[in-house]
Image (cartoon, rainbow, N blue to C red):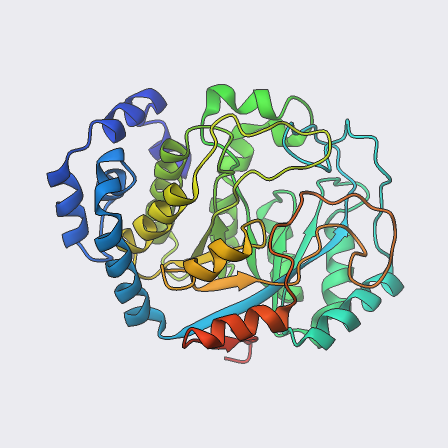
Length: 369
């Protein structure tokens, strides 16, 4: 069995109709589940009907998060190792049709990045690259992971979808978390945003978390690119995907990210823009739906929004991020994947977190445990 079988039981337009026809009573019933909801409950929590309950939703989300995670906030940082990519994606600065200098870091450049990142205090890193299987493939990632493993206790990966045996190799090298975003679950329109490259294969990407689960990865990160299609419908399918994975691969942990479409060179504007208030609603909806899932917020969001989002249900946050290869230690003239919004240093973000009564966690997990 795979998620595809579950996915085929739902129709995008019918799901949208159910979301927009949810009632006040549906929302109140969903809130009563307090972290143990169903996809149907989540549907109500992201509906327009739930907007009038945003304050009690925020209070409930805060309480559930403290109950499960306490007053801690994990800090992580992305390290981009390559902007080479063979896909054309209409929303991404790394897209093949963008005429930008292509850079893939060598061993010396990687270690230079590591030195800067370690000096910031990080022990938790996210490796990111464009999707170029031949030049930035499994062997390259194996080398990078072995190179940086002595410096980090927690290594996450956000690269192209791979086969199960490839994930097994990388897990053995030291990867404990893999993030894979479907971008949009609208299969009919998916090809519009991914007209060329391996990423245009909707089904292969959809079943990537299944391959990860079978490979035995410690944690899987899910998400949709908020702004491509209706955020409510995409988020419902993300929650449906999470619900399925937790039942099938119950030994694995899960996280949800909230990548709102940000400006990037040569890329489209959001077709379905999402307001700050709607993002607050979505964050709270995920926590009320599932008290155990980790919720992550990146530097895509503004300083002001992130300051207020800390107490809404978020459990991890990036800081000091660069989205270009060599961005920490070198000036390689590599274009960013997207523009960041919160440009504060990790120390400034940590101080903000501490001032709100939270403990900053620079290290989350170690394979020794």
